[in-house]
Amino acid sequence: MLKPKRPRTWVVVADGARARFFVASEDTNKFVAARQADLIAPESRGHARDLKSDKPGRSYASSRSGARHALEPAHDPHKLEKHRFSAVLAETLDGACGRREVDHIILVAPRRSLGELRGLMTARVQRCIGKEVAKDLTNETVASLWRRLGSLVKPAR
Image 1 (cartoon, rainbow, N blue to C red):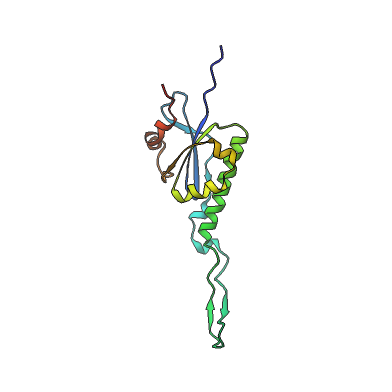
Image 2: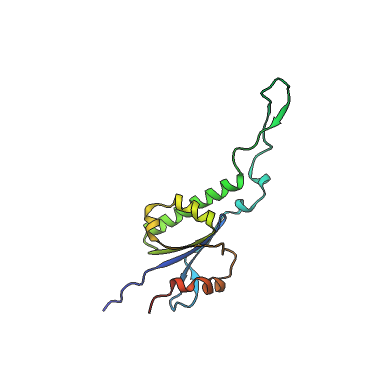
């Protein structure tokens, strides 16, 4: 008789520049990597001067004084890079759900990243989201993550 397939649950631990993917091991006592590699966007952690091309432009004042003023950039380059990374992460999760690599997703990210991801995720990915944890745990060790999140993926007995 065939054993029923155990649902595959991914724990995705992310922030604005890094995403780590885990599954519970076969004996459900630790996390193992769910993918070959993490998603990393080192540009999001760099200096603002490295992300933009040059100094902001200058403009004359609207009055006839002839004074010139620097223009403020329209967007924060760090926020733009974090948004791009969130879009890549949402696309990666959509691809995994489409290929049936994952049945349930536990998403762990800071509040701001969770909000941004919610707006970028497709309906297919949103159906797979089982739980959201609003914490930044990207720098935790795998053992520490298991202590904090292992109860969310252990099968009910």
